[in-house]
Image (cartoon, rainbow over all chains, first blue to last red; front, side, top):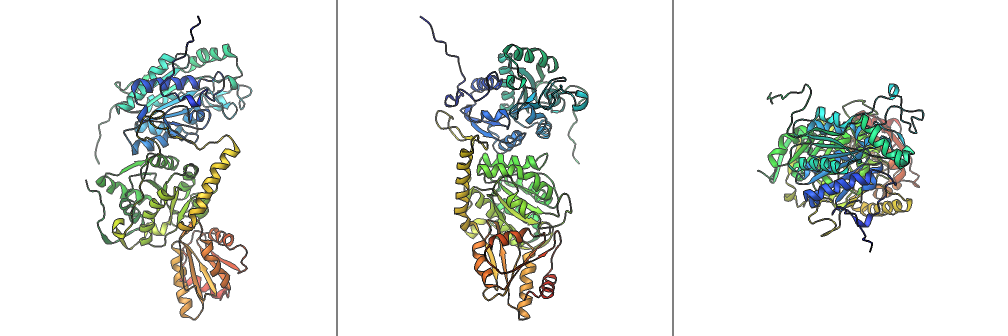
Length: 262
Length: 363
């Protein structure tokens, strides 16, 4: 007798909105599942506010049994900072793509990191602007073809891909948690996201997690080529791991400056 | 910690920015998100000095875009959140206010108009009327108050919070640089002593109960896939706006019953206009005065019969026809000629208005 195996879905999964609206092969579903499992594990469903950006991430506006706000491109973090400052007991998750984080919303990311805002920011990096039809993103790899770099991205003309976690790790004060995971390792990704949420729950500082993800629709790749691009090419440029944990001091030449009154 | 910043009534001599900060405190505003721009800075200066004494919050954001969106967040969280800005900052804030308009969020923004376009002057103008009433991508479903004195600045800042939370449209107090910086006598008061009850706030996210099990989760969005879907949402909001407009509209008149010349102005300019009408009356001319206090919704209905009876209408404003266009649109079909005394970014005195009336032989 055949046994039907039902995949285990997070408790916060909202069945009414499934199957979800992302393209086949998209990584958003995996990242969101990891987030859902992390919320379940911490038991914070009742007080978590999920915010999503414009771009593909907006398709998650009714994804969970969580209070959710869909905002403008790049503006999710300020909205959630506004919520968090008004209601510190809530746990806020700012969910966006690489464009929202590193291009149009870069000033918000930099300033939130500098302020060590108590938010958990999750950035899905798929190296393209996907919803608008596959244009170059801040994370497009050198040589990668997109709709606005049809001959391949020329880093001499358009710059090199932005390393988000490295940027945040360099500027965030002590207490921050910064990591980069990948949809190719969901267990590790969930672990990073859970630590990021825990960091906020404990009031230690900002949490920033980038998730390497896939976009076969705009990459024009089949399953094998999609996976190879994520696991090999993206990972070669965007290293996986933890960049900051709340216990360690910022790296580089940063040093503690004691507060001084005027 | 003290909770009531003002008990009863107090007479004071203060700047408009100080008045706004006191009014926000008296109104029970919970948190301000702000970014410095002249001439509104002292609103933040006074707020940051007084707010901690009454358990209120403040965050200085990285720009006006962030201040606007953080205000949206504070309102979503169920708090009386507000911000203040001017000129190019008002331009940046329109993005967040468009979201507030779409989602019917009771945001409050105090705008202290400065000269424009672009950076222009930091002093004064009435050139942010179009922007504040219609600045977003949308239909301008907002409430915009234009106070003319410090007493009104206090009253309408309190009222802005109440109208925002009662009607759930983004609400603006459209002040200006002169109001911000000048001192004049003002009576500040605890709203309760005047019988004003503050509208209760309610959170739109972070409600009690386990979402999906004990209650429906709040799924708030401003994006729509289908034109029919968007049309339905918009028409519901437009209908709601139109139905509350008669209750929201406010205006002021003086010497209009037999007026042959009707002078129309808003904000501080209306004080010169009213004084000009008094001078013209002393000289035996039948002049009258009409002032829209709400620029959006615009009080066209009460204006129409007065305009129909007058032989001439003069719109006086420190902008190049922003109010005049609202007046003309509101008076469509009425043949009374409309002249403008239009001085973008300039202050206007009563003598100038009287002189203009005689020079153009409007009466």
